[in-house]
Image (cartoon, rainbow, N blue to C red; front, side):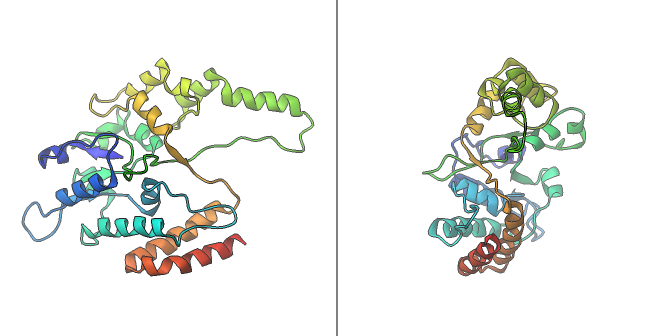
Length: 274
């Protein structure tokens, strides 16, 4: 989660700690959402880009499997009710990325790839120059601290290969060799699954390179975040189901009928999985 330091400081709000909760997120968003120039229009906001997938992560919920989905249950309804309350703070105004860029928004979820893209000089000069910002883990519930969504890249071996032994050794080399994994981190915007790579001196240097002191993401903090993640499902129809779910759930939330619609949405999605 990206945090606008200047906005919180202006409002007299302490920067959240890494173990903050969704209650903290809501309360701070509520506190900063206001009409700052008294023209009758809200022009400062709590968040941008926090959606239904993010709130499910914050509650530690995974609802999609290869043969079914689990939307119509108490915990999911509670999560979506929370999101509905959060959206209501801005009177249903659609906060934009431009609002965030201009320093009018307190919070914005970022992927690690986005963080690494936005941080390096000189891109930073044209992006996020109007306020100080940094990142911490996503908020969780009191009973859930696994709040970060992890999208993984997988590698496999064909069952038809005529060179199983050497193919297997090649896969192990690509995924387990520290030097290779370090080079991937150096030349891409992702993270390595190897703890020794994420905590290496080279990684520490990468994370602080060309960043301002208040915004660098410490490798120890990043490692703790990566150790508490929800791994994105990997099955054939997942992207298709996610796209349909995104449309149906957002439509229902916008119409204010999500609590009553979940059973119907679940049945539609399960039919797609059959």
